[in-house]
Structures are given as C-alpha cells and as structure tokens.
Amino acid sequence: VVEDTFNMITVDGDTSTNDSVFVLASGRAGNVEISHEGPDFSAFVAGLNQVAADLARMIVRDGEGATKLVEIRVKGASSIQDARKIARTIASSNLVKTAIFGNDANWGRVMAAAGRAGAPLDPDKVDIYLGQVKVAEAGRGVPFPEDEARGQLDRKEVTITVDLHMGDAIACAWTCDLTYDYVRINASYRS
Image (cartoon, rainbow, N blue to C red; front, side, top):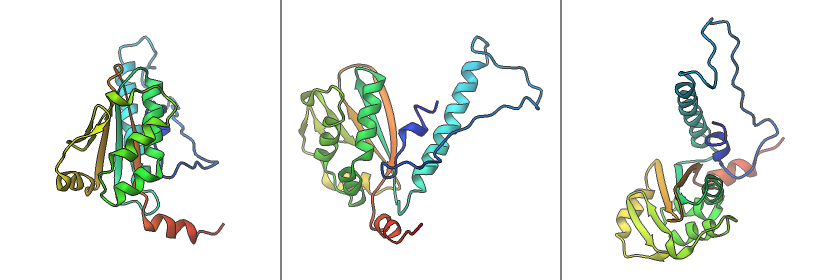
C-alpha cells in the first residue's frame, strides 16, 4: 500500500528525516484476525489503500504555497516499476510544476521528464493528455484548443495522463504546483 500511495507523492522532491508510515493493530477491539489467506484480506487492503491514498493526497495538497493538487497517471508501461519511475519523475519536475502553476499547456516538459526517468519508453508511441485534452500523440504535438487546455490546468485538481503504449502497467503519482509562495516560505524559513 505504501509503495502505491505515500511513496508516490512529492511536494519538492525532498524528504524529512521523520517521514514515516505506521499501521498498528493492538487487538483491543477483539476482532477476528485477518490473514493473507482469509476472505477479508483483500477488502482490508483495499480499504487501507483508500485511506492511505487520501492521506497522501492531503499531504501534497498542504504543500508550501501549493494552489493545485496534480495527479500524474502513467499507463501502458511495460512494468509497474517503470510506470512508478516515470510518474515520480514527472511529478518531481520543477519545469512541469511551474508550467502547471502558470497554466501553460507545455507537453514538452512532461515528455522531457518522462524521457529522463531512466525507464524504457519509445517517444514515438507516447500520448499526453492534460485533463481530457490530448496535447500530444505518438510523441508529437497535436492541434488542441489552447483555452480548453489552459482551463484544465486552471483547476484546483489537475490530471496529466501519459500513455506509453508499451504494456499494461499503470501508476499514479501526486504532486502540487511550484509557486512564488513556495519560494517565499522556504526562503524565509529558519531552523
């Protein structure tokens, strides 16, 4: 669960020495123990995943100076590891994050981040969407309504989808925009 939720978020690419996740069960409720083989295990994991994903998104939404929650969806990867690596790299890109802040439909920044992720990808197969607006197909820009794309980026929650067309693996990462306030807050911070 942690791999798909808390390990898929970033505000600025940095971590804290106290970043950690704990899930504890004291047994005090007296419920029946859930085992890997039991019928309730998958329901427990699904519920835990939902709670963890909600909490992870809250962390990003609360990032210093953040005005937007951004979901990066990578699909069509050849492995889950590759999908995660590409999604995290796009989510960590300062150029992507500033373009989102400026409502700039700059799909080239998304493609560049995906390309430098260190995971296999064929740029001639990649499609990119900003919300529902397709901005690149088969690695090339396509004509799109600029005002519609800008409208997709001018929301409190933004979705960028990158379809690699190389397999069936999917991963999501969450980040926020990089704003003037982020710089102001962190420039004035003293320990």
